[in-house]
Image 1 (tube, one colour):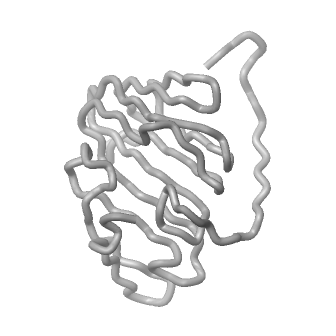
Image 2 (cartoon, helix red, strand yellow):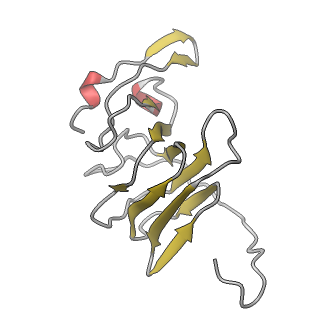
Amino acid sequence: MAGMDALKNVVREPNVVELKPWKSIHDTIKEPMVTGLGPMDIPKSVMAMGFARITKPDLLGYPGHKHPFDQWIYLIGDSKNFAKFDADVEFRLGDRIVKINYPCYIFIPKNLMHGPLDIKRVGSPFLFIDARVTKEASVRPKKVAKVRQVKYIAKNNRKSGNKA
């Protein structure tokens, strides 16, 4: 992945990695971000996570795409109050556009078309976290190594007729 060579986290202790700031893969995110690179940091680790601070409207993950692995996107308030989320976001998930104005995470099953994440309004900065279980650090690798299959169980608590 372009730019990943510049990211050099530091393994401080076995299984403890110091995160070093680096430039986001999204050119529109100007503030430094941190990313845990999974196997690039610790060979037996298969979870990679990137953390960015969003301060203005943006369009991330364009065009729509899919991955051969599960992904989680977290949108939460800033470090003063994770539960405070003052932004308007739209996200394509499959054939639906989901409107979000609350702190959340979005589970994206492997091979599901998704994106872009259209950040329409930012009333106060928030955290964007991208998490995935894969041996590759890239969010869109050309080839993906096999990892242990994980099953997820979630209940849909929406009441009949109540659409998000």
